[in-house]
Length: 248
Image (cartoon, rainbow, N blue to C red; front, side, top):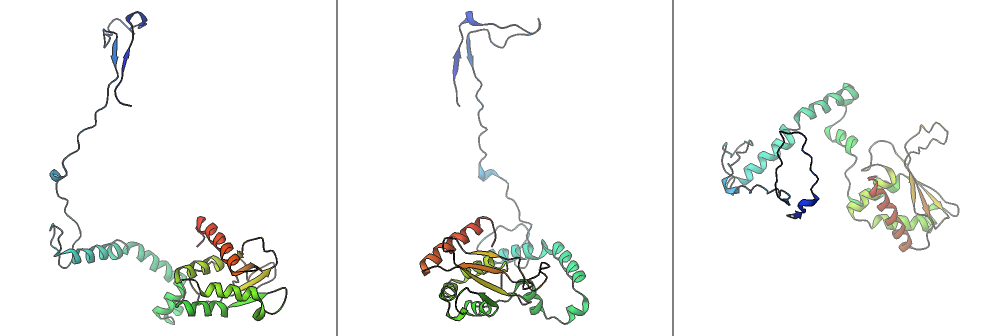
């Protein structure tokens, strides 16, 4: 990189012109490699001001941005990004939604019910955990689920998660981003192998046959850990691995 000078004694030259009309670019034994000089940067002040194409209430075309029109500008940009730019694509979504869902079914649904069927129930953390537990069944090798220490340890762990961690945990366990309003179930199977991390199978249903055509029932295989610290440590590993593969 940079400049350098290469000295070749004249006696070492071995140059053969391609033809008689060719003239060498140097006649001495000092050759200097050309150095590319970057063009000077233009003065930013000299740049022509770019006028914004955003318009709306409180804005004048070509008006410079200032503290007086900043709020109006932000509202206009938001409207353009979320309404005007998205409108052509939203129309296609609405058309396909109308083809999938019959008119009769749409008439029986409120907007809130439509939203819940698309994005799930919007619950606070306590109601979220309660709804999750209400859909859960158990398989324990010893004792009842109510008296099983592994089951109790699990729900204590779940109940103490902050809202965002709770959402990620639920998505990892079930494949759902939120509590569904349609039929679903959840199952916890307590396993004796303490050496493994918790694992999930989100492809299972409550249909035990090979057809597997029942209600969706994601299943958590939960090792019977001896302490809460071990459970939290192993769940950290499991969630970190799924995060790297964008599973939640």
